Amino acid sequence: MSDGKTFREAYAILQKHAQTLRSQQEPDIDNLTTIVSESVDAYKLCKQRIDAVEKALEQSLGNARIESEPTEKSQRSVPPASAGFADMDDDVPF
Image 1: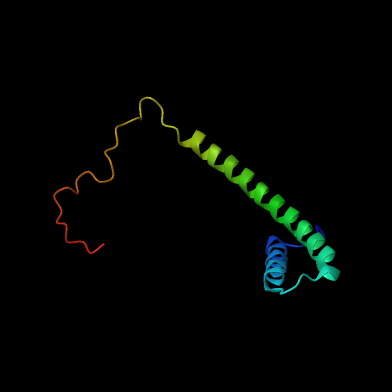
Image 2: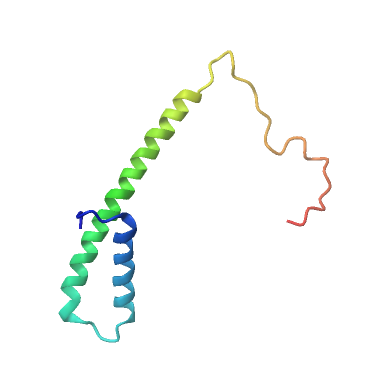
């Protein structure tokens, strides 16, 4: 499956096989081995890509936290987001 397929292509295979299996009135035993094999390969590729994205996000967010940590001199108290809105009318329709 790692023959250059993208996440989207692998995910499409999983969706196609899932729909095939859901719509069958009787199991198609002759094609079941092929469906399972292709699905396992597609799943592995999707899982690898998801894991890689999660790792990259964790690293990026970790670096962003380190870079944005305020020093003791620049720390200040930030009021809650709702502060200052208590006197507004409650006529907002949502």
